[in-house]
Amino acid sequence: MLKCQVINSQIISLTERMLDISTPLQGSDGEERQRDIAYEMLRADIVSCRLAPAKSVTESELALRYGIGKAAIRAALVRLGERGWVRAQSRRGYVVRPMTLRDIGEILELRRILEPAALRLAAGRVDANRLREIDAVCGAGYVPGDTASETTFLQAHRQFHLSIVLASGNRRLADDFRHVWDEIERVIHHTGLLRTHAAALRHDHAALVAGLASGRGDAAAALAEEEIESLHRMIVDTALRTASILVPASGNATEKRNQSRTGLSS
Image (cartoon, rainbow, N blue to C red; front, side, top):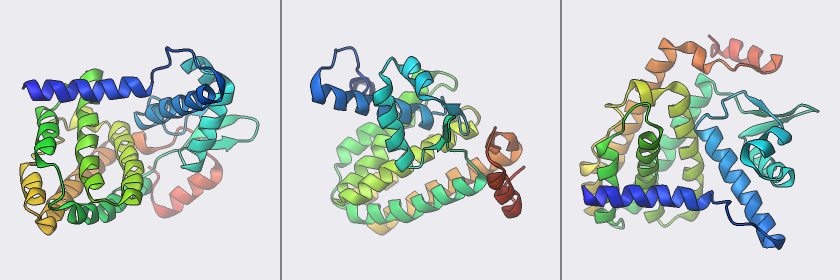
């Protein structure tokens, strides 16, 4: 229990340090840090759906929201645009990228490609004790509706999977997986799985860790594939029961026609 509390504190402390803007920033280094802080704040709010899919925002609104200068906000929005998180609208600011069933299918398909490959590379190279400590936080679950509890659970879950991918030794693979995991968390928030499937989201990773520790990469990859498939089923079930959560609140006519042709609109 004590180890769980320690890791919990480490996870929360890391998040707070990343977003600390209490110290005045001076010079070019300060400006760069402001841009990084603005980017992380925006990214976190998009992933958590505090900035919901299809929401329109302006630089002025975001500068007021975060208490950061417009120049830093503008630079962050450019970076987010390059990653596909936002799209500029002529004379109307930006729009957060909408989400469709097709997007969700592609995100999970990409995870199916990347994670098993990383697990095979990481087999025999992971810090099994560290993974077990982090997994204890994941296994403890969370209280639906309790923001701090949900954040701790998701951060631990992220850290568990990313630690394995980092153990693969492939930095580019790890960078791609970070982006995919952001997408996965955004799907979880947008579909409301934290409220509707609290028990099912608590995975037992003991067999996965044991497989990795003993160098059985194929066995570990198979377990990961089962976990991904289980998540996919939960998401599809929730989406089909509450189709409106996947319908963009706004969007251009071309996007809506494309969704209609591919059967992705409600």
